[in-house]
Amino acid sequence: MSTESHPRQKVAIVTDSAIGLGPALSTRLRSGGGFVSISLPLMVGDQIFTEEDDPSLKERLVIASAEGRRMTTSRPSPGAFAAAYESLASEGYEHIVSIHLSSELSGTVDAARASARGAKASVSVIDSRTVAMAQGMAVVAALDVARSGGSPAEVEAAAGEAARCARLLFYVPTLDALARSGRIPKSLAMVGQMFQIQPIATVQKGRLKYVERPRQEAAAVKRLGELVVADARQALAEDEASRGEDGRVVVAIQDFYGSALANRLADLVTLELGSRAIVVRSEVPPVLAIHAGLGPVSAVCEPAGLVPELSSTSS
Image (cartoon, rainbow, N blue to C red; front, top):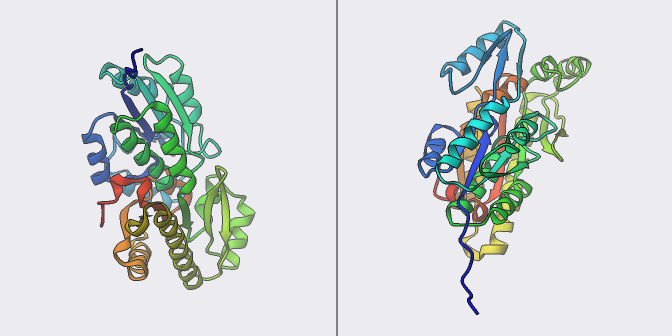
């Protein structure tokens, strides 16, 4: 009886700009083929912009924020997904794993599913239930398995495990932008301003959740550092449990005009964990900065064995 195995499907990855990979890493991932990131539209007043079409978008958002203009985000059109799926199918990819930010925060997953039904290649749409580089870790893990010849099920499993293991924390220096975008009640922002609350938050089960609400910037910054180091140690312990002495942790730090705090976090992680910590830097993507305002900083800790593509990346 023949034991010849079935040929592996060629698998591609699609994601969205809510991950904020940064130019260098994005270029590196695209260079291997089978990877597309779709820009999420942003609205400033009644004008629509995307990062892809407007290189000066970051500066535009800063000016709009200073002017107090209304800013919001929108899901990509089904046509944007259809074009991406069509392009990958024409390149010979038989299956596409499409990984997106939490459906609790955006309708992007719904747009992807609508387009998946008419795609020439088979498409699996994954709701990462998270955002920023926590979502990015899922994307990087999936892409590595796909390029290693993994099956669609193996690629999906890698994405799911990386998303579950990613520990996300972010610091928002003011609640004003969250209130303007409707993410929190305006009354809560007023109370926050009154008591100088500097929240530390995460995304849990797809939704924004406050971890702690320190008062005063100094206390918040100190506490954020403690929490990030604790998360990094836990992720390192998990990696050591699976890989022994080779265990390491990837710590992805993102900021939007909050580089002083981001630098401080990076230095602290390196001081505490030395070469066992791989620090990756990029910006908080504009589609998230719209809701968080100026100065937000996020940190994501992930066992390095789950994201080998990042294990050789440092800042």
